[in-house]
Amino acid sequence: MQYDNLLVEEREGIILLTINREKALNALNTQTMLELFQFFSSDYPKSDHIKGIVITGAGDRAFVAGADIKEFLDLDPKKGAEMAKRGHDIFFMIEQFPKPVVAAIHGFALGGGCELAMACHLRVATPEARFGQPEVNLGIVPGYGGTQRLIQYLGKTRALEYLMTADLFDAHQALSWGLLNHVVPRESLLDTAFGLIQKIASKGPVAISKIIELVNVYFSNPGEGFARELEAFGATTGTRDFREGASAFIEKRPAKFTGK
Ligand code: COA
Image 1 (cartoon, protein in one colour):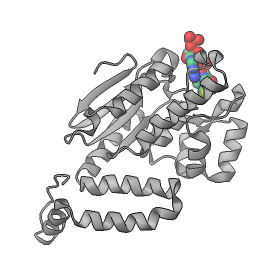
Image 2 (cartoon, protein in one colour; image 1 turned 90 degrees about the vertical axis):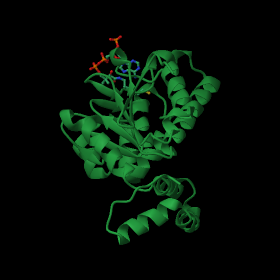
Image 3 (cartoon, protein in one colour; image 1 turned 135 degrees about the vertical axis):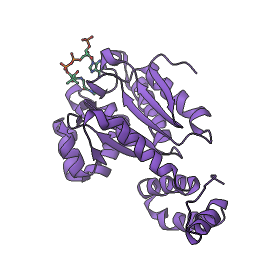
Image 4 (tube, helix red, strand yellow; image 1 turned 90 degrees about the horizontal axis):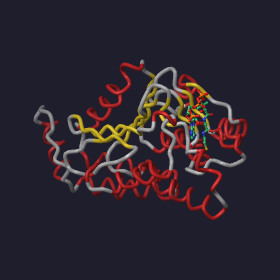
């Protein structure tokens, strides 16, 4: 499928998805959100041979500098709620995607950009990356999950401060607070993101999809996590991959998983 604002490239079974609006610092306008929805609801990224997805921003200045403020003056309460709902739906699709999704962040990750990064499963960034939820500068609240996910990573104390002051924070703060997995130089950014997915791709795919589901349950339905883990453990012992993984260990050879 052809997109106006997304570049989709496949390298060794990993999709590199680039938000491609460099002149607008990759701001998420309506068209880009629609395209993200189309991409994540299409069959292609779920194909058996796809190991995972790396999301990044075009150019050197920004991952994504937020929702497109130039479309904002047209909003009213009804359209605003609809816009936020579309964003929630897309970012839930990313968060619940059954294969690893890694954000590769350089430059600004603000507003919807920080929210997009937080919806991914893992995040790597350059030392120059800057994060924030500056929506209160515009008199609005974050609408793509920022009030909920920032707490998950930063805790209530820091989340309240950064949501209310609109201050930005840098990559080293983000790393030490648990928002980032790794901070690496710009030239290593994509390799690090791809390397994480390659490593995960050597494990049992069914188990990986269950890990993503179970960790999300901790936040969406906290009371259910242990029960869902019991179910998932039982289910994974019924897979061919489990037989293969255990046999490979005993036979001292690498496992060959098939996702069945
Ligand atoms: N929506 C639409 N356009 C945006 C944008 C956004 N969120 N962020 C940046 N742009 C555009 C600018 O309007 C500018 O376009 P122009 O050249 O046509 O005027 C271009 O990207 C470059 O941005 P500029 O502001 O000139 O760069 P800067 O280096 O001075 O500042 C930022 C960079 C990120 C600090 C600043 O652009 C900014 O604060 N952006 C908005 C961030 C935000 O509030 N996001 C949350 C939205 S809910």
